[in-house]
Amino acid sequence: MDRKIEKKTWNSKKILTIAGITGIILLIGGSIYLTSGKSKLDVDTERLTISTITKGPFQEFIPVNGVVMPLTTIFLDASEGGVVEEKYVEDGANLKKGDRILRMSNTDLELTLANQETAVYAEQTQMQISHNNAQQNTISKLNTMADVENAYKEAERVYKLDKHLYDQKAIGLQEYQSAKNTYDYQVNRYKLAKQILRQDTALVKQQASQSQEQYAHMKTTLELMRKKVAGLVLVAPTDGQLTSMDAEVGQSKNKGEHLGQIDVQSGFKVRVDIDEHYLSRIYTGLKGDFQFADQTYNLVIKKVYTQVKTTGSFQVDMQFVGKVPTGIRKGQTLQVRLALSDQMQAVLVPKGGFFQQTGGNWIFKVSEDGSKAYRVNIQLGRQSPDYFVVTEGLNPGDKVITSSYETYGDIQELVLKK
Image (cartoon, rainbow, N blue to C red):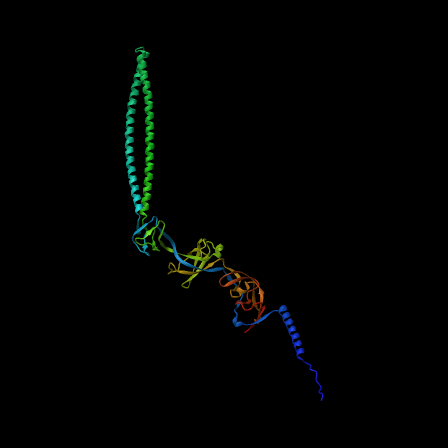
């Protein structure tokens, strides 16, 4: 018996076709929605940090570490090399100016001093002998000069007398000529004797001056050598506390080697390490402050050491402005806030994790009703450890999300759920 077969309205092929078309439509629609509208993400407000934009005083500063040091430190170095023979004080001793610290020995230096002293004494003796010889030579020449002068005067007297007699025809020409010849001879002899005496006097003065200069030079050299030997005994150049002493009996020290230092007890300074990134912005006169025993104390930069260390930092010396904290000690570490600008009024946003993802170019701003947050473009300026200065894009009273945006990707809008 024949049975009528009913035609199926929904077969598997038709169902798959309709499902494929529907999927394509949904995909196209979703793509259109995502590209034409804002992508959204529901977030729990308890997991967010919402901050309020404020306007108030701002000062750019950086936190740095400083070490308390004596205001004045005098380094003690070996002026001459030698072996430490005796120590008179130990590290940490309080000294007065002139107190002996240690004594060294240097055989070569001491022998050189002895030889120099012998040479000076020998030169002094030779100078005395030369002086005596010069005096005797001068006396001899003076005696000769006296004889020549006497002979000259006698020849002059006889010549004048014989000339007068010759003019009176009392004596002959031969007798007169003899007197004249004798007189002329004595005149030349007298002139020569005077010239020799002048030259001798000048020569004696020159030799005496040269001897004095040589002797003075040798004495100066001797005094310098004595100072070198005296430098083997190290004494305190001023009042203060001996620290960093590095010398033991029997130890050899080279010339210029560090032996210790004296900390003058006249006050303290703070030596601060600063990252080299700020080198161009640091100069004398910049101020800072720190907290100590629940009080704020002020500092000012007095000296900048521009040499950058291997650690990537450089150092400055800061001195106290006003009172110095009671109980502060050498070597103590202080947390200093170093100001890089004067205080001014500015629009401020608290620092937060948002900066790592946005670079300060945009931020999520909360709507007035607090139901959502959306992206806004901003510009940030100077910063302190707590705040950024907002130069564009936000106003005081605005609320923004300052916590991390790490999981938000390219989300354009946040739906805030409480």
